[in-house]
Amino acid sequence: MNFNKKYGLCSAALLLALLLLYFLVRDPAFNRSAANVMLVALIYCLIQSFVPANKKLSIFLSGILALALEITKTSGWAADWDLFEVLLGSEFDFDHVWSFVAGCAMLYLLEFYKDDGPPRRKKFFGF
Image (cartoon, rainbow, N blue to C red):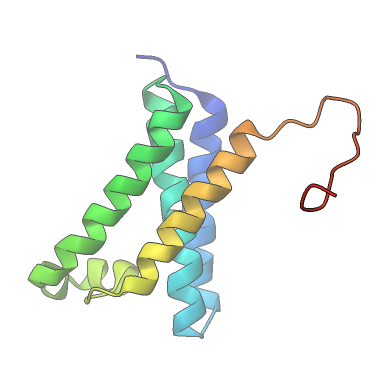
């Protein structure tokens, strides 16, 4: 088990950005949506910094873990812990699931999008 410095620094930067977002942004809907996207990225960076795993599998697992945290809020355990209630919210919201999907898609694009080839003409609906 090796520590990957690049992903470790990214996870620290994402944690700092999450805290700044929480303290500086006053719109709760935007705060929760952006924080959920960043939460998926934070989980992914933590996985990659400690366990050198397959990147596609890590993206999938980080989305599943974030979804599991959202589903466990239906039991009401987050209301007992003030820190979790502030950071994650205390109730299940289906819109958060879409934020997790957007976070996974963003991670996939950032990790696997490469534009090394020559530019080619793309057809619009096959025409």
